[in-house]
Image 1 (tube, rainbow, N blue to C red):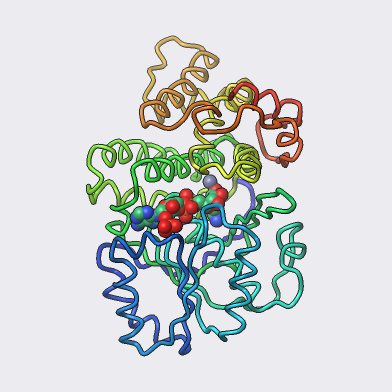
Image 2: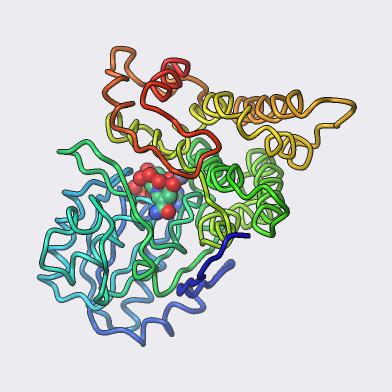
Length: 389
Ligand code: NZQ
Ligand code: ZN
């Protein structure tokens, strides 16, 4: 294990009925004005809005609504929210949604207490948050990103064509409510893409040094198996509470910093997908599904022993006299087969990306991470993109 400092300040309320049971009580710790933030309106169709607004009214809160937060939230939407939070003197931001709403709200909570340019001071480069952002509470309605329990806020700057996020511990929500029955109404494609995002986060951490025995990798293997089993069950029956509640907690566990402890982490696939998203606005989990097997075919040799371990411990592939090289390749192909099985796209074409898009420009805009088994070059990223067509 490498050295680490661990902190996670978000308080989690997990399970069916948690909003009804605990939200009233939690709200009493905050001031009168609550900025209620959500996306394109799914919460008005599935009853979550009504449930939350009933509690806010009962607690005599003044509610300021901020809606229309898009998937892959933009910096201009963040600035709109910052303006509203300042004008309304909001005491608490209540984010009700998925990764996009959560991320946008984290950025708003920072901007509401900062007079400078938050993009250049906290997203363009790492910054120091030496002040308290506006308190943030989260009610998750679609799981996958794990944003609820970390300080990451992935924002797209449309003008600069950059999608990026940094994990600031001060960005962590004060409280998080996870009722997986709230996710039953999520369309199947989004449910699967969210679960694949979770699997991706775990793999991005697992496939990095150290390779020697370590608790983080052992937990990661258990989590990967749990995602695979429960995603299959959730596809069969979307209202399988056991499956949905496991997937919800898998997502949080993958990104609450616990399995990153002592690990270098990779996240090159996320670098590539984020830039693909900045240029095409593609779905995050689906973009990752296309990229992962192709990327892993490129780095498999460099991380051979770990990919072989993945094949045996996660996919149950028998060693049966096979070399590490054979096992490693079999592990990557088992992942590729699983992606097909769950109905995720496997090519840019299936992802809906225009075949005339300038892939070189996108490849050149991707960040290169330091912790991968094999350090990418922009030329190799372009090759990966070409192979994804
Ligand atoms: O906008 P509404 O109408 O609410 O519809 C949403 C949206 O269309 C819908 N939805 C949410 N809850 C629902 C529902 N539909 C029916 N019933 C419900 N209960 O789901 C759609 C997708 O929502 P979105 O929040 O965009 O999805 P997701 O949670 O996958 O978030 C994606 C964003 O998170 C970022 C991604 O890059 C992307 O921008 N990520 C954030 C991370 C973090 N902060 O830690 C890590 C990730 O790697 C990722 O980068
Ligand atoms: Zn992700």
